[in-house]
Length: 222
Image (tube, rainbow, N blue to C red; front, side, top):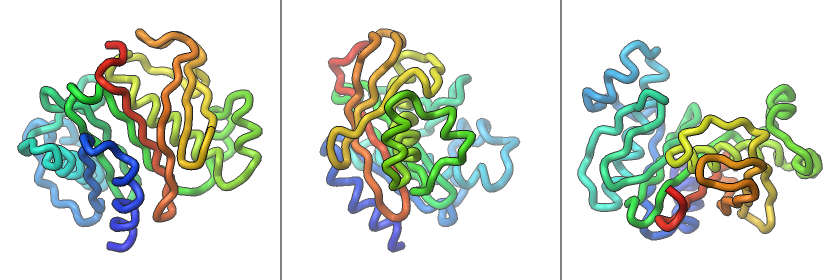
């Protein structure tokens, strides 16, 4: 349980009190999905079912932290989670853990979270992800290329419920203005967000992982 506790202790202090968080170990998760969730992965291999179930269990833990009852989190035609009415959230998992963040949509319009191994990106992925000044950041070492990737994934997942646009890694650029902080700036207009719009997020290293988190408050464009 060491890594699970380490992750929880690293992430929770960085989140607003009004954001619920859930963490689950994939291998410990039982397949107790709601029928709407079961149908979404009816043809999935057992490992994929276990990862999916861990994400849903983590999401229900996050909902419980907000005082919400357990509810199905179905999958839309775009494969994105369908959150209960009045909620915004995001799920990420790796081979070992699943993490979910959930908030009331009256507090936060949308949330994005991504969890990655604290390892260098494969060369072919690096070439696709890095843009302009990000190359110099990656050359500073410390698996900065993976941190850029993780930040972009979280930012994309945060924006998607509003824009419903699939964008590439070249649609934004990431910088790290301070320890544990990142800025993701849009390089082109995306949905209601203009070119130059900046998402300010948190990036942490814990338990051999990089985790990026970002949220937009309810006053942001819809």
